[in-house]
Image 1 (tube, rainbow, N blue to C red):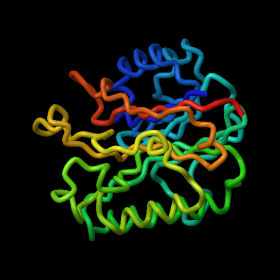
Image 2 (cartoon, rainbow, N blue to C red):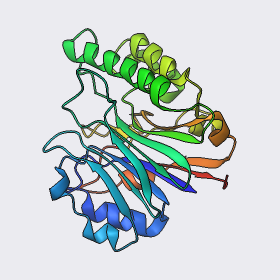
Image 3 (cartoon, helix red, strand yellow):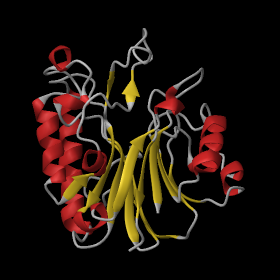
Image 4 (tube, one colour):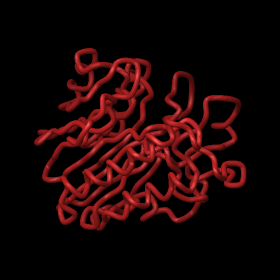
Length: 257
């Protein structure tokens, strides 16, 4: 099974790139974030022509998550099912070929200490609570998405410059560790110990060309699923050129269960 995750930063703006990428890489499952359209506006036809089925939770202008698969998507759930709930479309889960898969878009947080930062930390706590409540740690499970958190300094191009700032602050990293403490493995780090690997680069300046990036897009796996992983890569090539998303897709391959 080949599973990919990509913050496309608008499915409409990135439609042609996405279609070309899926045609080349042919993932069995594709998790998308920031699709930025409502469900009825999602451009299904071109990817359905490649054999994909869809589960969507769209939202106009902002957010929006999706899971595409070449096999049937079962037991689709949107949000966390908690109170008071969430009007922002940031989490969707489905089961594909016996693997429970979630696509999530964690809030950006804007600035450390802001109301949006507090919302981000609370959202990560809700994610952990959902895992505790709704997912069996013994089952094959993947948590994919844009987490807006660089877990360690080796995930940051300039740790000193980013120290204490959004995406890299200790409260965010601690909140993410709580999520991972449920029993999740960073699949990319299972195969790559070295630094200098990033999945997001600022549009401003020459950040991409100088590789001034952050690794904030992740595929996390339950222990049984991580043991089946054969590799995990970040497709930096997909970030090149005009009209690219500021995020690169992350993809991993897994042996059959």
